[in-house]
Length: 424
Image (tube, rainbow, N blue to C red; front, side, top):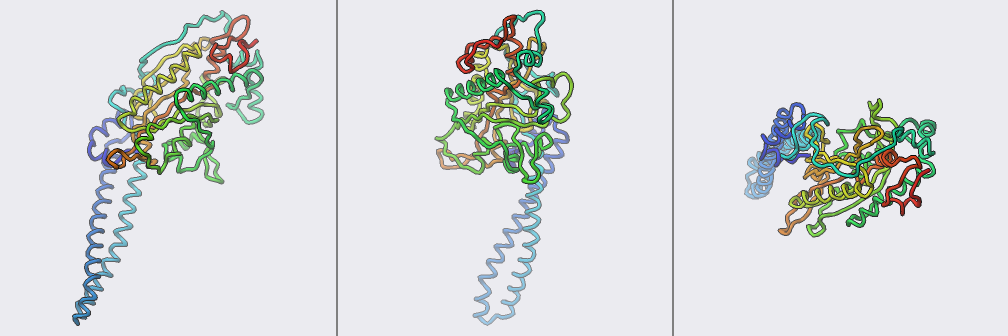
């Protein structure tokens, strides 16, 4: 969440940034935060003044009694009792103001960086780079859901029987391809210096608040109500929360973690042609990169993550493009975000496969994730993450873009992981 210092010192810039994100009533929300903080501070100052007076009077009561000044001592005792009663009310008011301010801050998104473009929807995102190989498919090219059925790779109907729509069953070479991609992505991450984590796939509410999924996205998360636990939408949540309430040493930064997990998203309201097959699922596999860094190095870390994801797509020989997201299309928590999309030749559309974000101090402030600098002072870390990569649409693009009359070709980089070079 935003820090009080950030809001107080850059009020107008914060409001402009929130308006770029199309956050409604930005000025009213920030004015209310400032008012609550002023109330909290004013009450704290009065409470401190009263406590100082109580301490001073308490020290004089015994002396007054020794000097035989009983009436003055009783008056001092009465004043102490009066102040203590008033302090109970002040403490309650201060706590209420602090809680109200904290709850309000949870509902305010991060402020985008200056280079984030203006815009309200995905149509306003800016393409910053295109790459990869052009694809020429047979005239009778099939979309991946038909290829999956033809070659016995994925059974969507069986998934509906077992669970419901959006929970496919991978079979035979389809399951092998899925596992090959997971291992390929993890190996590439380890080569790049990431330490692999195997986290839980359910988290508590504190973890959801720490990374910003709560209270913003609770409707999109599967909630185990009896135990008040949430199925994770991404490994970002458990891995980043490793560093909740932790003070790191500057020499430990940047921390680089990767994790493969299943991910669960309700995707409420999703329907139509864009959700067919693997295009939008409720459960899917993903390898995630997470970095914890110091502020002056986080932009370099962000670029390194972008380069890493681009390298994966190049090795998979897929056509891709990189987009800088506009303010209105960015996530609640991101300060800047780039999306990677691969082109589906059979569907004639771009499919998002990764988002790589820098959250600045926004998540770290929620998490109380800090580091101790060379001067032994504590500072908030910067947090970053990105998919490297999400599997469903990668599988869809691989199947569609590599179909030939003889079968589906496997990119060279994946052959050692699959154990076969063609699906036929």
